[in-house]
Length: 381
Image (cartoon, rainbow, N blue to C red):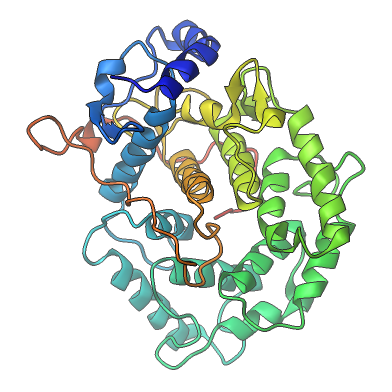
């Protein structure tokens, strides 16, 4: 039996179903298992006419993890897939046996061949991505075959732009690394805020995605820095005011999963529940509801609809949902990779199965577009 919260959500997001029907002729479904509030399992495929619901969100999260794990058996440095490692690692999703060691070895080999002490990567942003990814999958970036890559994060003279500031600040705070540059990155971010409370990838054009990642970077300082708090509060108001009536967010005129995911990420890192906070619920549809409305049947997320899987959208949606679930379960933030503080974690999303225990569905049957379709101008996690 569906729990009362799910029943309430079904009614609340009826408009999402109407839009889905008008766009593709079918309701959003997902072939996966989830548990309701009483711990009973039910097959989400039986909810074929049900829009995104409370428990279905976790099933969608499971299925996205399966898709990413199935389609990424090997990742090496230079593949620009550090974000995939971030999501899978922080979710604890079962992956191919050699995935994480293979990435670590590729980083080690790159450093041995190209790196110099204190300047191991071509840019500080590249170093930041690697630091975040290695921490997420359980490796120590301060000892990569004897090399400590974290001091490069303090080379603020070579950091240019709000995205780079945000990435580098996030990397520094994954394990609270010592750095005299931390305050410089924070100051640069605050100075880059636009008059409407947003941030832009070009420091001039208001951008939802950029604002989301900046909120994630500033989250650790919200309670202790009054200037940060004021800036973040303005940005939250900007995001709330720019949420579409569908609950989603748009970039360059198109409502899409990437922008919506970045908002869910930023809010979750701040400890804001993007599913229940009234500032981010429009017409009964929350930002989390809207994000899940882009889920493609069988696993993965589309970019502007739920008809075709987009790798990049799936990546961002997955780690945004990971941040969301960590927040509502009282765990460390997605980007806080210090030891957990006496919290019983939510079980890692497992590979969905059918009633006989057979893994399903086969990801190889899903149409995939590997070209990122997003308004972002810089590579993001």
